Image (cartoon, rainbow, N blue to C red; front, side, top):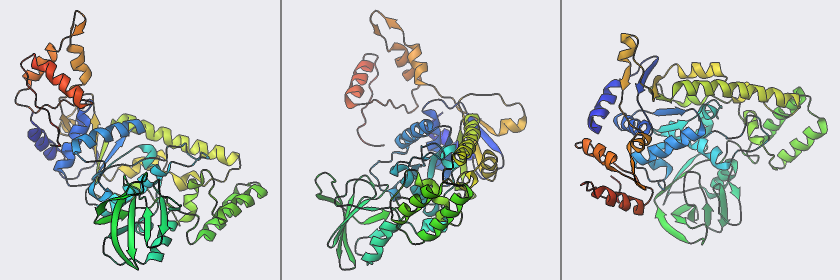
Length: 443
């Protein structure tokens, strides 16, 4: 089946909205990402891909990046694909998440608010964690264009309120530095820091610069300034949050001296390890991630049984660790303030059209099941490797070459780690009357 034929078949199979789940089966290895890329290309609707584990999500993201052809150096507004991370620390652990994970979550929410058809990849651990309200998020990012008027003092205050750190020299994401009419900053979502040059209240230029040499480089016409954190200790309204934390500490019968020392440090702007889990006290109420999704969003569960098992496991883990933290008199919010439980997870998925992407091909037991199932034939690299036979000291590529010849009329791409590996493979296959062109540019 050609790409266009498969794409047309997928488009017809997945058109409109439906209740329950459809099944696309026979997806092995890279076929999962390839089929998903065809779905995304033919459908201008938001897509949420749910993988069972962080490793599965990252591998799928890497494969999709290849098929989407998106350059990693593109700005956030130019990329459709986004990996929505979890904190990657155990629930209610006294450890802070990596700043890139915090910023990556906020960037994903931005895409759902401002872009018509983003493609997000997440896990139950990432999606069961509640997020800041939509209206709060809308006030967290700025869109800057060279030549516009910008209230400089208000702009600097915004940076501090949303987690940017004032430093002498900008090197890491979330840093900013001020030198006269120049503001250097490193915004989440970008691979390089940028230099903003002001003439009074006018933003004269936006240029990338090297964090190593500090020299200005490529000019930019625009900049999307995304938040670094969900809250800052230097933002307005900190006293209200501290009063709520004080009340929660009393409910947990936390040691008074420990509580007072902690609250005083926070009042002075001194961060504490794991303080990110106090985010529920900085907003009237956190909301479900799924409240950000438009009704027409397509949910794609990559291995539905494993995804549901992970959602159940993670929900139980969060509640167990919350109980243990309360027993230890640690200052933690109620589990339901920060996470969905496994039952709420199931209800959150119900309103959306769902697809279960599966590797195994199972015969449909009813006519309805047959109508809601699409079979795709795919192969693993291991299948082809198993076909190769060993003659003497070296393996022969003859079985592989014969398979390639049988695919004449189809588009076949061989992806090699380096140019040298690609050249060597092409040379070996030329002995079997196969001349493969070398592609050095994106398709």
